[in-house]
Length: 396
Image (cartoon, rainbow, N blue to C red):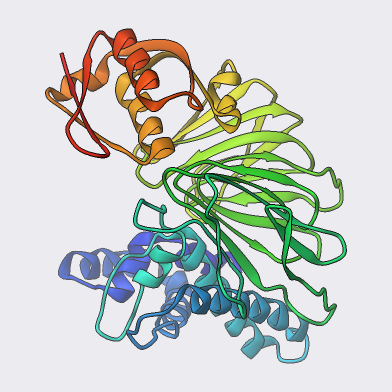
């Protein structure tokens, strides 16, 4: 598996298969010459990726989630049948695993006439102002979430509660792979959800969470774009995994915050209690896993491809779930970005260098918006002028 998966997880290899050019051809030709023992693995990996080509057509959100569920079921079925048909079953397993990797990693954005990779990007794209807050469940109508802060609970009896009202049910069938549900929270809204295992997740504005309707086997895994605070139900035999595009966080039972917006250069994980492991994921981020202890921040730079551990004040990273924003010596641009997401508004700068002004303070985001902006302007010694219904300009 490892000999082939390293190619399925290599962005340069994937690009070469789907969108070859002279530079890539020369690079991989040289690689094969220097590594003749890898020839068979390269051929097999290339065939697997080519087998994932589909017709170029639009898919609805429900179709995307349904396909995701089918992929996971295919992986499960292949694992069960591997002993009976080892070679063919292994090929299917590789293909399914590769497709799941593309789907949750959102790393492949190359377009050809007969392939629709934008599907994978859309699947875990950062929600913006154009999207509506909703709960997506395959085989059922989307549930619109009108409230500014919604509450969703998956109960032990199989019922799904939305804002304390029964909105549906999930029946756990032992022989059936779980369907993947998706919670979409655009700018201007937040949500709290209790997952099927009792784990609580608080989603910040501009986030989406993909998760199974019930957890099976020995892994509890969810997929996140954006920011969420997790209070994980302890289960030493079944680890809880949060998968982002670049970092995978593995825990048994703990509380931590993850900020993984595609538009941000840094993925931040802050641990409040317990222990977590930041493991090497599909893109081979770390040579070894990184173990965190409470009070630490792991900041992964997506450009430099490296992570740094620091001791921090955890309130600066977790109070958002209570409608508060605390910051110490933070760039104005960082604070402004958080306000854009929370209020669903937009800012521009008269001078880009104004975004580098460092400010400290604490904001109650539940107060009047103009009052909050006034506090920020005072702290940064700038003027924040309203130029439209939801548009502001920052001036000296």
